[in-house]
Image 1 (tube, rainbow, N blue to C red):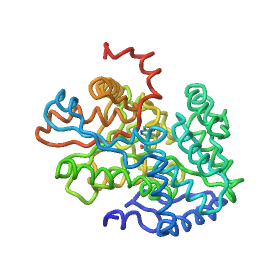
Image 2: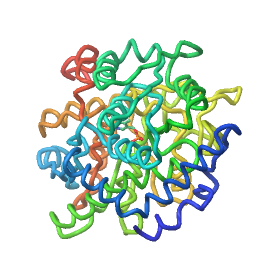
Image 3: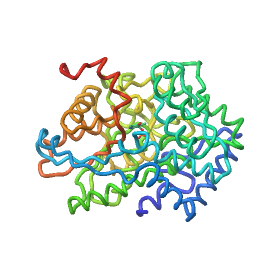
Image 4: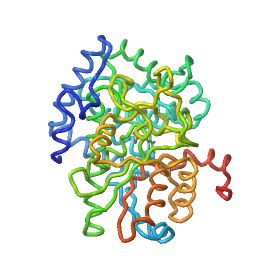
Length: 401
Ligand SMILES: *Cc1c(COP(=O)(O)O)cnc(C)c1O
C-alpha cells in the first residue's frame, strides 16, 4: 500500500476532521468486533488468498482498461480511457466490496448479511455475495424504491434475499438505513451489516476503500503498460464515493490530477441536486462526520439526480478530507450532461454506461477540449442495462437533448 493509505485514516477512523464513529451504545461492542476482525483479516494470508481467487475466478478480475478512440476523436484534445468496472460480475464495482464483506462475515463466523438499498444495486451485489457464501441475506428497501426498481427486487429474490419493505417517512433510502440499523441491533450477534459505500461509522469508510483499492492498483499497472506513462487526469463519479476512492487510491501518491464528479441534477438549488461536496456544510449523518446537504431545520435535505445510485445527502468522510486538503478536485455534471454522455458512449464506443458512471464520461467529454495532448482515465463504475427502459421512455434516443 502507498504511504497515504498506510497513514490515513487515524486509528480511530478520522480523515482529518471527518469520519469517526458515533454509535448507539448497543452497537458499540459489535463495531469493536468488526474493527478487530478487519485488523486481523487484512493481514491474514488465507483471507487475502481467498479474496484473490474469488476476484479472479468468480468476479472476472482484472477488468480491462479501454482506450476510447472514437470518443477521443469526437471530443478532440485529450485522449480518453476507461477502467471497465462495468465488466465485473453483476455489472458494477459494488461486488468488489460486497464479496470482501461476505468473506469478512465468514471469517467472523456470521451467518447473515444485511444492508439497506436505494435503487437496489447494493442489494443485488450483497445478495450475490450471500448466495456465494451460503448465507442468509436481509435487504431493507423503501416502498417507493421497491415500486420504481422492480427488476432489482426480482433479482434479489431470485438470489435468495429477503426484501423488507420500509413504509415510514419518505419510504426511501434514508428510512431504509434507519430500518436496517434497527433490525441489525437485534441480530448483530450472527449478522454483519454490510455498508454499501465508503460511508457509515469507522471502520467502514476505510475498509470499503481498501476493498475497492484493487480498481486503482489494476488501472495504474494497465495504463502504464498500455502507454508507458501515468494518466494526467483520473476522474470518477461520487455518490457515497466508493468507486472514486477505489481508483483514486491507486494514484494518490502520484503526480496525477484527481477529479470527483458530483451530480448537479436539474439545478444548483437545494433539492434539485446531490452535489454534497460542492454545496454541503460540515455535519453528522448516519454515525459519522462529513459534509452534508441540510434543509433549514438542519435535517438531511431531499436530493435529486437522474442517477439513483448517486442520490445521497452525505458523502464519504475521506472525500470531505481530500476536498479540504485540495488533493482531489470536485466538480459537477448535471442530468443533461450525463444523459448526453450516456448516449455518446453507447453510440460511439458500443458501451452503455450506468447513468452514475455517465457523469464521469460527461466530465471527460467536457474537459477533453481544454486539455490537448493530455490523457484522462475515467472509472466506468457500471453498465447501463438497468437504466435503458427509464432513459428511452423518458428521453427517446436522445434527439432532443
Ligand atoms: C452505486 C453506484 C455508484 C455510486 O456509489 P459510489 O459509492 O459513489 O461509487 C456509482 N456507479 C454505479 C454503477 C453504482 O451502482
